[in-house]
Structure formats: structure tokens, C-alpha cells
Image (cartoon, rainbow, N blue to C red; front, side, top):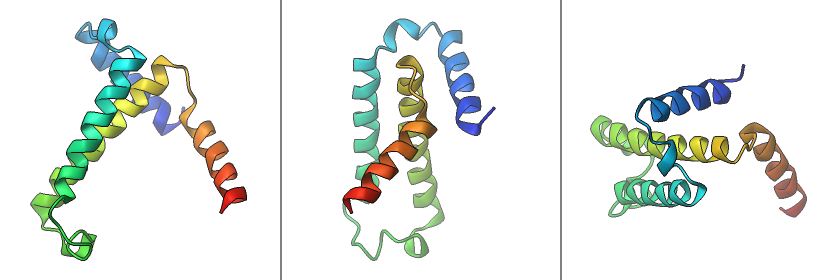
Length: 102
């Protein structure tokens, strides 16, 4: 089983244990992705391009960024699960499309 599939199962189990299935509609999950992406953006909002580089980030700032990345990933993986989307497959498909475009 791939790492993404392992995460998908863990995230589903977490949601199931809390009876959140009723709230995990594609609409709600996509809105949650957008909200969490906004929180990720906020971590960089007042940094210069140089200050946003890994070598310039304080460990506490990097930790905050990592947690926001995790939130975005959790909701994306959950959305993919609800819609029965194979994340690895569609990422490869999109990379192939981008390869022909750029």
C-alpha cells in the first residue's frame, strides 16, 4: 500500500471515529482546503521573497508552516478519498499535461 493510501486510511479512520462523515462532502472539504491554504499563505504574508527561503526561516516559523501544509494535505487527501480520486495517478497525469504545455 502506498504512503498516500496509508494516510488516506488514517485520515478516514480519524474522521469516522468522530462521526464527521456527514460533514465531509466535496463542497465542505474543498472549502476547508481553501481555508487552510489561506492560513498557509498567511504564514508568508509579510515576508520578503528572501525571508521566505528555508535558510532564512526560524525553526518556530518553519514548524508553523509545516502544520499548515499538513492541514492542506489532510483535507486534499480526504477530498480525494470521498471522490475516489487516485492522487498519485492524477498528479502523474497532470505532470504529463504540464510537460506538453511548458
